[in-house]
Amino acid sequence: MTEQEQKRSQTYVEIIGDTVVGKHLIVTIFISVVLSFVGFFTGREFIFPRIAPEEMIQSYSLLSGIAGSVTGLLINTFLFKPKRTLNETVSTNNELSEIYEKLQLDMEEERASILNDPVTAREMKEQGFYDMFISDEKKEHDEKKKK
Image (cartoon, rainbow, N blue to C red; front, side, top):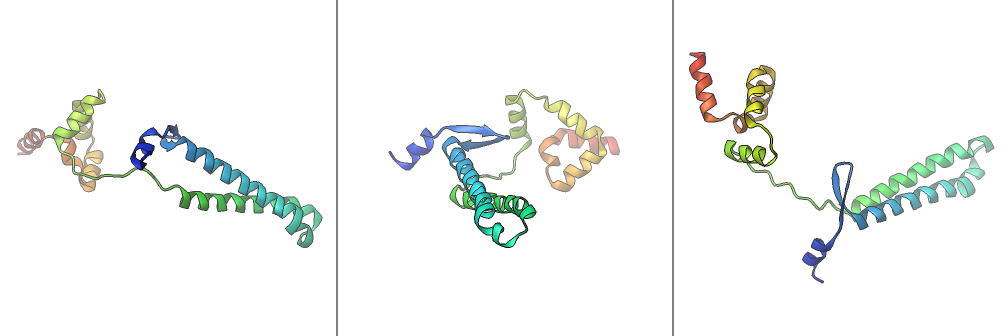
């Protein structure tokens, strides 16, 4: 099986609004849990009985378990790189209208809410995406209105 065929055959799962490969999710959970327990039990049985008072062993062991979790996080970060790519392109007003139509949203209602709220309009102009939402006809109409 080629690499491209493998990518197509992978099963994706949606977790907290993000899409991940199911097998990778299971492996990352396993790595994190194992390292957390290893950190906890190592601290409780070998490290802290020698250096900490009896009543503090459990507390310090929890800290070493957390250290194990952070170690698992770092390992998982290096093992599994993000699969998505972000392609930033400037969208035109027509492209945005098509997207809104596909999503069954009302573009005119969105434009009206932007035009009726000067704070939102100003922020969108500052961020540079006001022109994507407001059509050229609306801009001309607003300019004539101001005169």
